[in-house]
Length: 202
Ligand code: VGL
Ligand code: ZN
Image (cartoon, rainbow, N blue to C red; front, side, top):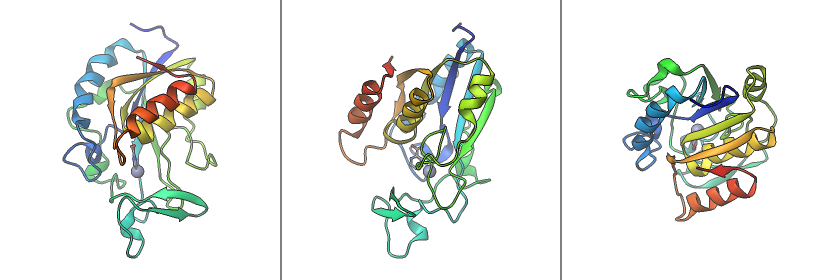
């Protein structure tokens, strides 16, 4: 059992990020049994859910002639365009079937504003609005977070960087993450950035 001031953070363990999903992460399914095995070791477990409205600006389909992978300016921020994924109240946005959700203490949903994307579980990509996760963790006496999930080079990375910025000791459970790798080497680069910012890689 970890100390009571340590929380486990499960990032985006959702149907659409599985290898058969709309925004497939290779081997993303392999992190689920690890998450299930680790949960009994934590008193506090928070999970994030990518939770987009159908008109979300990160969907290529919402921009004429744009395709997934292209980068546009979305209300002043560079935005990678994605396939339609994790639409609120749809199957793709649900937690993966075989994830043991009984032990999850609290869920934070992100990406709900159609005008801005939100990779981090703490803030949107412009750091304009908080999800309330940092305050919630502090209220529950948490000083350290252990992060796993999908995708290493997007939502996991930005969740880890914000956790550090919010003053949490932060460890990445690397074996329980997988990345999108739009470019080969993106995952290795993301891990270097997290370490450089002060994260411990387990
Ligand atoms: C994610 C791209 C778009 C992620 C979410 O969970 O890493 N990536 N939305
Ligand atoms: Zn998304």
